[in-house]
Amino acid sequence: MLKHITCTVCPMSCDVVLKIGEDGEILSLTGNKCARGKVYATKEHTAPERTLTSIVKVSGGVHPVLPVRTNKPIPKEKLKEGMLVAAKVHAEAPIAMGDVIVKDFLGLGCDLVATRNI
Ligand code: SF4
Image 1 (tube, rainbow, N blue to C red):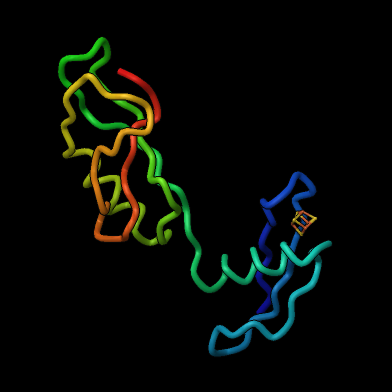
Image 2: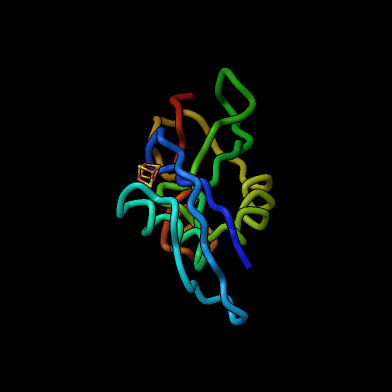
């Protein structure tokens, strides 16, 4: 089976093509113009991660919601759970950009942090 992954490490957006074996193993990898693309596509195939961005409710500020994000990428399969957890968070102003809103978010060793002052 062939799997196409667009490398997002730089603006070249190389189309990296992985030949995948029956057990999901990578048999070959082509289309990347540099080694970073190999690392990216391998990670994207074996353990994809994303930075979660969302909003949480906030009281006492000029806006009713606060934009937040995880300070490290988290496993892609945890994004939905993370969105549901973030939807239940209620923060209190004043909050500075970078403040930790939820420590050890989902027990993943990263924090949910504010991305603006409020
Ligand atoms: S493979 Fe290399 S050149 Fe191509 S998009 Fe990725 S980082 Fe850029």
